[in-house]
Image (tube, rainbow, N blue to C red; front, top):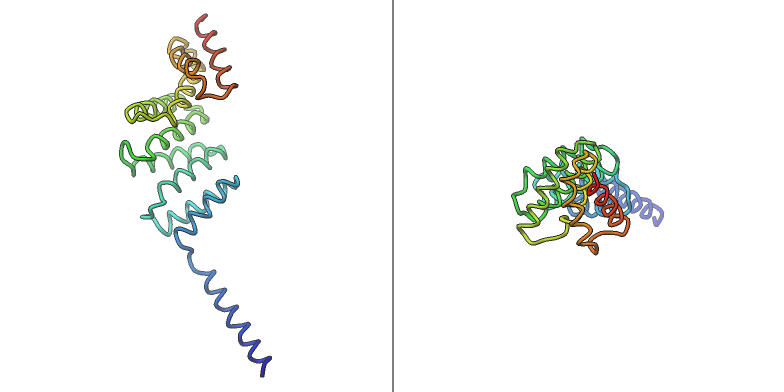
Length: 193
């Protein structure tokens, strides 16, 4: 009798566990997994989790953060066009001055920059600077300035690159030593061109 009871209990527990795992996880579970994968550097899993959240919970409070994480992962994986599409979709869903507005423009600029689309990257970085300047923030302003300087330098627009590199040199604590040194060298070269 005990054996029958144990076998029955085993099958009952197994059935409930299988039934529970076949259901769709909650939006919080998906978002938490997305963050875990992002922090661990499993970028393909970040994309999968973001798409799962978009599919099952399109009105989720986490959807903007998930899409931004997806765009960052796509950028890291050199899938720049998909990243640009993702960031463009996010920007259409948030308003100017929203909490993630400057961040989204910054990562859109990075995706364009690494894709070689310098004109759109420059537009994105200028937007970041404009937004953060209006809001008196400096989270994405300094790196956007550095990338804008790099773009103008690569395009051999040295006169336009000078003020950006001057900002980097004047605000050294916002930048790493290699970034500061790069800006100083490019600034000196731009002065002499």
